[in-house]
Length: 384
Image (cartoon, rainbow, N blue to C red; front, side, top):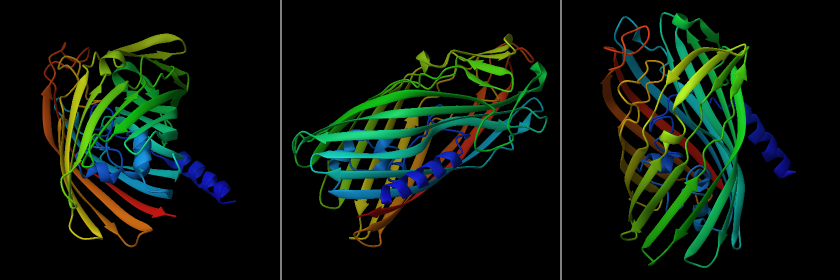
C-alpha cells in the first residue's frame, strides 16, 4: 500500500516537473540536489541522498541502512539581455520540483526518482522565444562489494520538450505551458559508477553517463532533428579532514561535441531552418567544503567552473547557454535523526559574448548577449 501511494506521488510529480528551464553548464545544471549545490556541484564521492540518482548512483552504497524520501524544489533565475533591439528576455524564473526514494538493505541499495536534467529558455518582446527542457525518471541499483568498494548504475527514461518561435523564419510551435513542450521525444539512457575508500578519510568516485539518445522531437507539424544530451564522464574525491570538515572535488567531461552540432527544424517534412551549434566539449571543475558546526547544522561553500562551450560564431540569443563561473553556499539542518532540510544557493556572474558569425538575419555578427543567474535548491528529507 505504501509503495502504491509512493508510485502515485512520483507519477504526479513527474507530470508536473517543469523541464523547460535555463541550465548552467551548457544545458545541464551546475548541481543536482541542494547538498551538492552548496558545494559547487561536487557529488561523486560522498552520500548526497537520492540526488545520487542524477549524480553517481554508486554513492547510494554509502548511505545508512533504511529508507529515505527526498522532496525538492529548484529555482533557476536567468537574466539575459541582447543588443540589436532584442532587449531583455522575459523568461527569468523557472521552478523545478523533483522527488526521490531510495532504500539501503544489506549490500543492495535501490529506488526511483524524477529529476529535471537541464535545458534552455528565453522569451523576447518581439515574440521570439525558445524553451527546451530534458527530464529523467531514474531507476538506480547499487551494490556494496565490501566495506570500501561500491558499484552502482541506473536505467534512465529520458524525455525532452521544445517550444520555439522565430518570427524571421516563420517558425511557431508552442503549447503555452511552462511544464511541457509542443515538440516531444523520449528515449532510454544509463549510468555506471563506483566509489572506493583507499583510506578511512578518503573516498574516490566516478561515473559514466551515456548520451540521451533522443530521437527527433515532434509536434504541431514540426520536427526537430539533431538535438541530444551529451555523454558525461566524471571523477571526484571526498576527504573527511576531521569529524567536522569535509572537502570534495569533482571534474567532469561533458561531451557536447558529440551531441550539439546542427539542430534542424522541419515543417511538414521540409527544412525550415538549420541552426548550426558545433559546441565544444566542456571540462567542469567543482570544489566544495562542508563544515559541521553542530550535530544539527552543517554549512557549505563551493565553486564551479566550466568554460562556455558555444563558439562565438554560433552563439544564439535564443539559446544563450554561456555561463562559466558559479559561486555557491548552502546549509543543512537536521530536525531529528529522521528529518532534515537542505538548501543550496548559486550565483553565476555575468558573461558577455559578441557573435562573430554572418550579420543578421542570417547570423549573429555584432550581436552581444549578456547572461547572469541566481539559482537555488531546497530539499526536505525523511528517513525511516
